[in-house]
Length: 127
Image 1 (tube, one colour):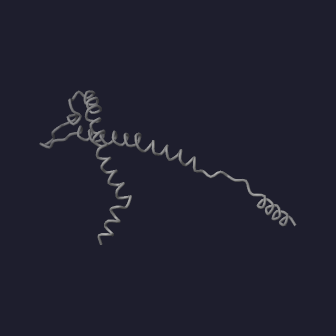
Image 2: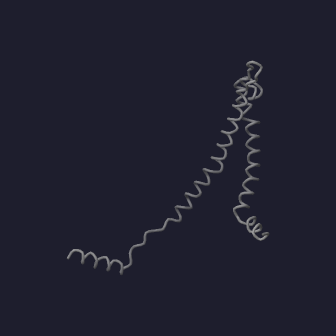
Image 3: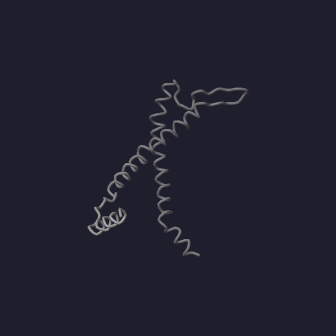
């Protein structure tokens, strides 16, 4: 039972996944800092509010609505998605494309025996 657990934990996929989760959390913190420290203030300045979450707040029948909260979440998502795409996905795709170009097998010319057999086959077909 413990051997099976050890094999499961030591499998490369589990360790790679654990590393990806930890790096993803750290990367998310960096992107969130950029969004909160740079992008959100610029957008909030455009709307004239100190914080994007304060944009579009209104009350209706004692219920609080906040369009800014939705905008803040939307901008966070878009910035994180753009950062992941341009910093991780696009470079990895380019790298894989370059590696695939190097792996393409070159067409070898047929050996003299194959050429002779092909010629014999074609000659037999024509009879």
